[in-house]
Length: 143
View: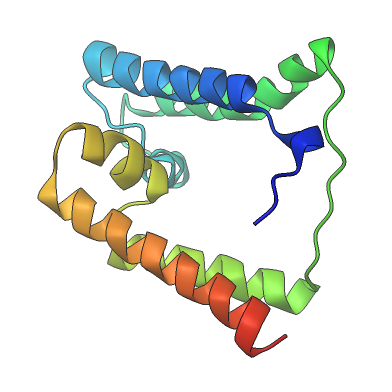
């Protein structure tokens, strides 16, 4: 295994992780809500009375963050090494997994694990193992 030292950014990654943790903690402390992106976006698409404002603000923050970051440093070039069909299939599989798992990686992996939820531990283990198996299959079996 080789480390790409040119793109090795531990301090920026640590800062980003701390900001995600802080945002998740503030959302649950101040609003009593879990920072699960699929649940938040699902609530925007099917709003309940009096529940739309914070969801729209959270979503706007997700969209505005890269634009604000771009003020200080250029954004990295986007390179997608997959075709449209692969991306479509991957997106559908993530959506189905999110529904079956009753949450997404942010809800289970960030918020659920920090609350020591056994269900979130099982969900996080399942999607991590699925990701490992997929990468192994794509890079070693189907290459």
